[in-house]
Image (cartoon, rainbow, N blue to C red; front, side):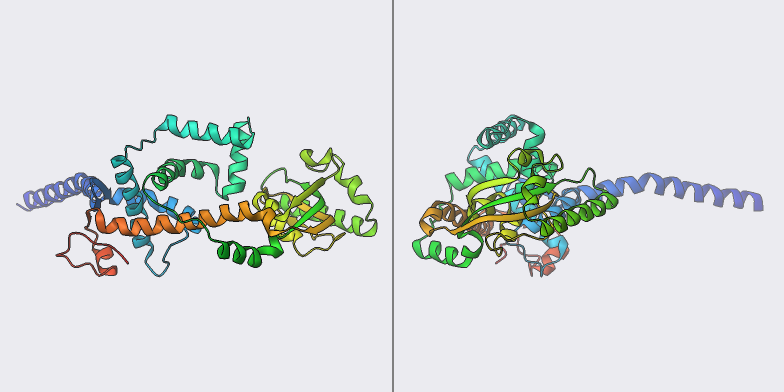
Length: 344
């Protein structure tokens, strides 16, 4: 009898274990497939939220209108809702972005930049966007749709004269002059800490030798140790407005701004991770009129971003949005009876 009872208990325990073993993956799949929001005809699931987490963390420093008072989960859901709005409206406007469209956009940008090498283009985009190329290229479909919608549906007001003058006055110390300079730029052979430390010490020693003999700068800048694109002209960069320099390299423009004519910079690291020394060979003021077009472009891009953000907020009130995530509802004070919403 005891043996039968023991056998029965063992059989029951084994059955429960088998049942739990097979149920757990199903429950996990159900949890991941759980819809937490719908935007028009687009559904956002828990799996979408998990997939978007890493991307959002890498992109958030580039997102201008983030409200960091909100929880991370809520910010990621908002991130997905905004992108779903773009997808829904792009579909309505027949804006299609497939793999061929993305490749065509890359080729067009390479042509505009005068670059024929894909690797060179990838490095250039990493420097200008300040993000890894693989992240930049995953963002490209969204940016293409965004650009199309700005042309089709969203009117961006042009900057006025006062805004142009204000921007110039606030930034003239960075962009209001023209310079002629030499630069020594040496890139590390790898990303190891040892290589970085070794190179920093080497460039620091080069700077000491230049301080002892200023005429040696051009000689060193023309040596094989300097960047290949610079050595042929002994590191010389002819007259360039600090505005254009700022667009090319914000770090170099910032370093050059306070230096007087003949001034020598400390060792600094530029966007391309090169260790650099810069010497000012000439400096003169740049009139605002020479910069007007560039300033207008910068201000327009800022207005474009603000206008697009405003349009997204307005679209939340127009496109049917349902939220099923309890935490999001609580944080945004959405009652259970509400089916649609918009966050101010």
